[in-house]
Image: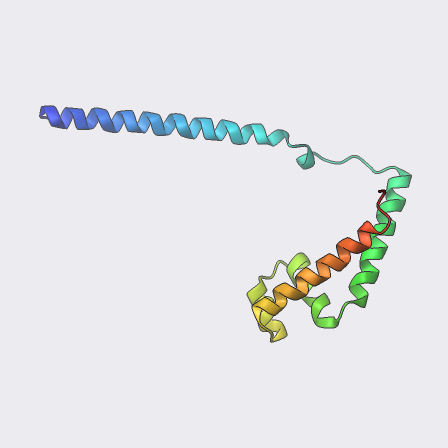
Length: 120
């Protein structure tokens, strides 16, 4: 190969080495993310925690039951069924923006139900 061809090959090898180092650094950063506490298994809740969690779940169920049918269905499809907003809009025969608004309103009501007894 000519001189410019050799220089070109050296540049390719250099760029591949740099890419490999960057990829290795990125992978090691992601591997450090494996120690995230919320990913670790949770031990069994104490009886007091179980009581609080059961109470919170009951409040959420009551709020869901009180929602208008389309709003409740939208939340259930989105949060539990994994449906997209467009899928829900087609099923409920409303616009995607309306589905987004219904889900947002329902989530605000659910969050408010959990905040009622939260310590200040």
